Length: 62
Image 1 (cartoon, rainbow, N blue to C red):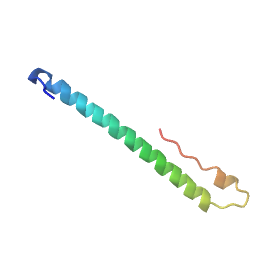
Image 2 (image 1 turned 90 degrees about the vertical axis):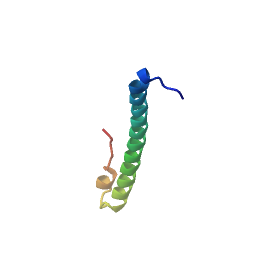
Image 3 (image 1 turned 60 degrees about the vertical axis):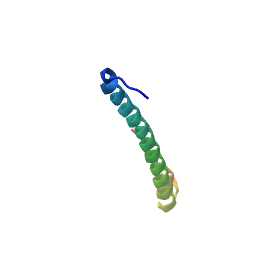
Image 4 (image 1 turned 180 degrees about the vertical axis):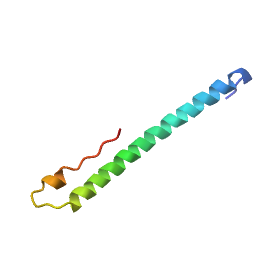
């Protein structure tokens, strides 16, 4: 890929922005997966007298 000196800053900025977007997507997915795993473990280990408490666990990503 050839880049003119005039476009170097814009090209670097776009490349870094694209990379940041990709990393952000991967991190969000990993957070969702970790949350699901945590909820699963909490539901398994929570007291189950009525089951209501254990069933109430949720995870959200903001």
